[in-house]
Amino acid sequence: MIPSHVVNRPTGRETGSFLALDLGGTNFRVCEVVLDGHSGARVRQSKHTITEAQKAAPGNELFDFFADCVYNFIAENGQAALTKKYKLGFTFSFAVNQVAINKGFLILWNKGFTNSGVVGADVVALLQAAFHRKKLNIDVTALVNDTTGTLMSHAYIQPSTRVGVILGTGTNCAYVERMENVTKYTPTDTPDAKEIIINMEWGAFDDEQVVIPRNKYDVKVDRTMNVQGKYTFEKMISGMYLGEIVRFVLVDLVKTGEIFKAGASPELNKPNHFETAFMSRIERDHTLDLNDTRTVLEDMLKIPRTTLADRRLVKTLCELVGKRSARLSAAGIAAVVTKMNKLDGCTVGIDGSLFELYPHYSNRMRDALREILGISAEYVVLEQARDGSGQGAALIAALADKQ
Ligand code: BGC
Image (cartoon, rainbow, N blue to C red; front, side, top):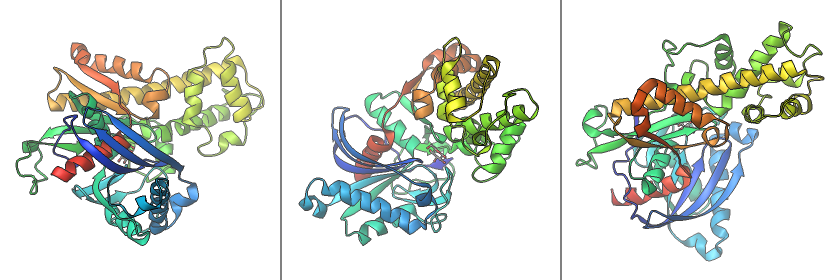
């Protein structure tokens, strides 16, 4: 429950040109966002993949890479553009102890990042220093979590938005809280603020491991991925982990002789070789013989021969793990909306590959919401949000200017 220091929601009339830098997990983006003042924005962006080596390099090298990408991005507008002054919103989608709108200390890395010298450091200062090394005239005016960005960018076009959720590589939620309820934070620079966005870091919910029932595969994922004992909720929900849960079950079923009687494959035994994207593909396979499932299993995972019964079993397994993820995230949303006393109506802006691309994901969430909230579920609107990490960060940078 981290106060984001964002105390205003957008009106839709914000204007101006801002840079945004988005480090979410697998990808890294540089964006130039021009807010038009009519709930619209123009975005130019460049996208980069972060390699496994970059995720493990010393922190300064990672931040120098960011500065290089920003330099090249600005240079596309001509050499003169490089001397201009810019304001930048930094979307850094990791657990950060945020102490000001433009200051926050990394609590712990996850999503496979291990760069040294960053945990415990102010990530804005690290980025600012990398810009100085590159002689870029950029002011990092806002540090933003992607959920806060999603809430803001969706509120820019849909004012009833009170909650922002990410369901992608990781998962998390941000919501609008009344300031009087936030006892851990006094808004000294904005004493009149009535509300504040809270970055819940809900991925770390139940790290005490006493609330949510876990099975032996969850325990295995916890032991083998990222920091053990941390991010319990996220490990049962998000794209980084679902495929690995399925893989662990398959390996077990092979051992007990219940699947792939013709033999498994070395691929199946390699960590993270059953991608969550495979689950999407298998769940989308409605052919009689489950042909696409066969392609995944035999061509991509090199299982020598599969029977229809094998493929049906794999599909059921994907359904179980995919459904549990959707239902747990719906449970989270139901809890937040109930806590906010917004059962009479509010919009939840949701972004991320699971929500956007995983088959049936949003319907399963809706079903679960109905089970939990009954008729009130009808007033909780789940909407696809777009580009919270780019446009949302730009909006927060715009509002930080006024704050
Ligand atoms: C991070 C959050 C982030 C979420 C979604 C989690 O792993 O800790 O800060 O919002 O992923 O990207």
